[in-house]
Amino acid sequence: MGNTYGDWLREQRQQAGLTQQQLADVAIMTRSHIAHIEAGRRVPSKDDARRLDQALNTGNVLSSFRPAGEPTVAERFTDALQLEQQAEMIWEFASTLVPGLLQTEGYARAVMSTAFPPWSEEDCDRLVRTRLGRAKIFDGPTSPVMCALLDEAVLRRPVGGPAVMAEQITHIVRMAEEGRVRVHVLPFSACAQPLMDGQLKLMWFEDQPPAAYCVGLSTSQIHESLSVVHALQTKYALTLGDALPVQQSLALMRATAKEYGDHE
Image (tube, rainbow, N blue to C red):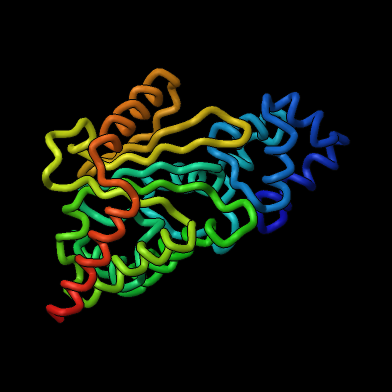
């Protein structure tokens, strides 16, 4: 078996004498999605993997296959990570912590240090590398469009200390200036909001319905029901309506980063 999903899928498809379009028709997927997986640009979701196994009559080989060197993430985030890698557009709301896609190494390590029971240094290193590696999706020619809606508390809580926060906020501002992400800050002056009690990631795709990923204290859930996803999209839009415009948000972030730098 090849060492990636794409290698294995291509081998099995060719052995079955199927074209990408024929496999897509049997698995109820699109040909472009199959092509992305075989080229290593996409990783199939669990549902995709099950359909491909059924179409190729391979039991649960792809469903259970984990490529060599696959990133280490919390078990509950595995499926969401796969969707994140496939997304064409990502809208994220964070109420307390900087979204993982935007974190610096210092900030990520500070967050990891709060785990209980504590992770070993080796596990922490792996998790940090994986978290930082997720941002590589912004480096390719098909970089997703991302909008980050940050509660002001994300900027004010000194995770890792002033120096770490100054670096982290400056990093986000730089990404925004480079056009890699659009950032809005929800100020403390805003009234109660429909997204205040959690973290939300909305994702859109080229050839599959949109999905949402919600995170709580010790739980997380992927929503694919169109009615649920639409309701969450509406909540995001309502909250975004009370956020600061982009330029005001960036000005606040620059000022906050300077405050942390001065404090240090």
